[in-house]
Image (cartoon, rainbow, N blue to C red; front, side, top):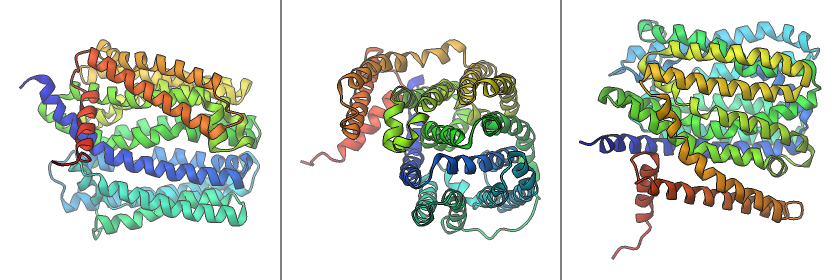
Length: 497
């Protein structure tokens, strides 16, 4: 069988599985959009800044103590009840440790920032990672079968309930507790619903500890360094800027992270399943290049649009009093764009049992990002944090490409080739965007102009990608799979003879 034909079925299965996760995550991000839109009308930047300060340390502790339980289970040829119970026990122990550690750190953190409100906020927010770790381990059996419908349903249930509660509290009280309660409600509802979708009667045991131990060691090192990398700007900024400026930075950061959360994060599980299959078939190199090309193809136009049209994005989503966050959003979107090539590395090295590579990459990012952030924030505030984020993203992508050459035998040339078509397609799309920004009346008709520009931008990009793919001889890959899947979907709506 020829190589393209061998790769195409796996690519299409991965994309079809990804449609469920990405679709569900996209729907949940729409819920987040609506929630953010409402909360931004009833709460101010200072409220967002206060909760973001508390969440910073919760994120760090949660990330440091993150256990790759799903990654360990999905690698098993057959998952036994004992393995499920061991995963549950480890999740319970982790949740208790996170909650106790945050309760102990609450008062020192509040003293550091001079705000006693942080004590109760931190203790409450610590319930979120504790609940997240107790989601039914049996949900992994659906991921292993590349059936992600239940995962999507689970997330939508959690987001819907949390959004309803958060909006109700915001409208009734205009208090920052709306953000806090909404944050905790999502994993709590997901935890309860998971035992309905994937029932199990858990028993406390560590009998299958050996299944998880090899991943946990290097993962702990990697996650510890990564946690500092992710949150260093959030740790430093409240000490050097006022709480409202930090609130604007946090809101812009959340917006710039939405494409990653809606597309890249939910794609991790299908990618792991696809890489596991490709490993067994000796197709790791082809699977990695295909997945990387697909993510670049999807995420590049989103981040470019967000960076170049940051002002209208802020006005449409958050309102006029947040307009000062637009340059911050532009910079963070650009930084996110630089890190896109690094996304598929994490699920691949997990499947290959090369977690050490993640620790190496995190160490490189730490060496670049932390000094840049300390100097940048101390002298330039928010702008310095954005510059540090961009430098770190570039370092992460460069190190990922170098590590992929040794881990999976993917040459730098092959990794750079997959970027050519998206770059060539984005150039005319940017020209269209600039013309729209010049000739459309955004000030008079913001909503109409914004969505018209977005539609023209997306159409131009899609047409250019299709033309470039056709000119290249329609090679196997994400474009071909997308065309075939789209054709199948459209055929369902054709009238039968």
